[in-house]
View 1 (cartoon, one colour):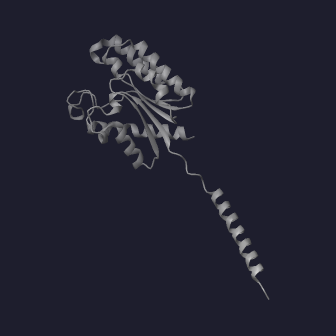
View 2 (cartoon, one colour; view 1 turned 30 degrees about the vertical axis):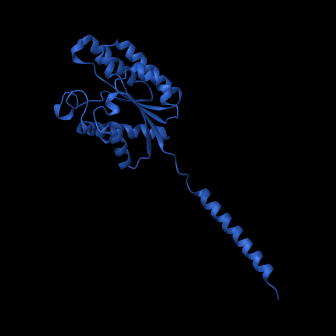
View 3 (cartoon, one colour; view 1 turned 90 degrees about the vertical axis):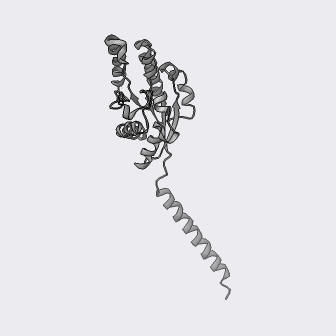
Amino acid sequence: MDTGYGDKRGRRIAAIVLACGLFIIAGALPARAAPLRLLVLGDSLSAGYGLARADGFQAQLAAALKARGRDVVLIDGAVSGDTTAGGRARLDWALGDGADAAFVELGGNDGLRALPPATTEANLAAILDTLAARGIKVLLSGMLAPPNLGPDYATAFNGGFARLGARPGVLFDPFFLVDIAGDPALNQADGIHPNPEGVRRIVARLLPLVERLLDAAAR
């Protein structure tokens, strides 16, 4: 008796059952999440001025996040010499490809140029407003006024960062250079920009805050 038809029909049914099973299994597996995108909007301190690329803030931060098992793409929005006005002006461009979270490190050059603290605060407020409107989580890293500008300037300058850092939904790091500023062993010859060890310590200190930022962005 010819059983060819029955064999073919059986193989066809088995193939269909196998395909359906694979489809069900694939549907049950969680989809691989895309890497979070973290914008670093800053000046020379986060641009790695005077350092080899691997020693800069962004490279060391990326390495630290990878070591913690974090799948993150850093968007380089740091420009040496930039002020808060410059960061505000190029924010839309920096966000051109989108971002889930932002690390904002600006204001040092405003202080070095003795720009009006109210202007610095207004520029940073506009940056935070733009990020909030787009649903982008923010970690704001503050700066302290140069001591040679006097107590009145320092009160106004430092107070602006404190007010912005108190905004709902904003993570705040009061001073990017805490425990680094003024230490010759942790700075380059100019006494302003951290050396590789100084950057390493900054990254180690900020890493828990950056992880909190990323967790908030992932929710």
